Image (cartoon, rainbow, N blue to C red):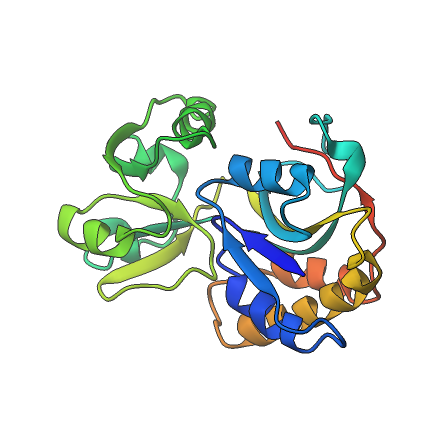
Length: 243
């Protein structure tokens, strides 16, 4: 079985959960350099299962979706969701403010990353809705030394709550930013592994709850609610891409 992820902060729960599945031997691990390249590997049949993270500001039941080429071959299960947080230096004035809003971030230096996932464009679109264009000063992948740059350069970035917090860095919720990251397992529908995906999702949900209980203050009720809805074992559904 070939498992893949790109930017997910939850790859360790995946590795742990794969070891608990019966009869899969030693899985082959592939780490893609972007979400788009991971999707291409999945559609081409080069991997069987992948961790996908999708950011959305719409409820799961109402969000718009559109198909990508090859999506008739791929299904996914959304098994958890978590809020999008702000990472900033611990000595930044907003680190201890009663609340943080997007308007207060208009003059900040931002971290983003160039590449096929179009993160720069998405950040500009997001901030544009709040009336400003972000000053993107640093180009650093999510797996790179973002914490160090935040601490030394006093910049900010958006982050998943499960991503490790470095020394001198804090995570804050943004009061008027209702973004959620939906964590999903995507699977080739013709893969021999498809029958085990419901069990994998159950194990991932349990691992996520354990992580959430160990990170008080980083997760809101929105994250726990999603886990409660998926605890009963969700069903495979055709994969779609948020725009």
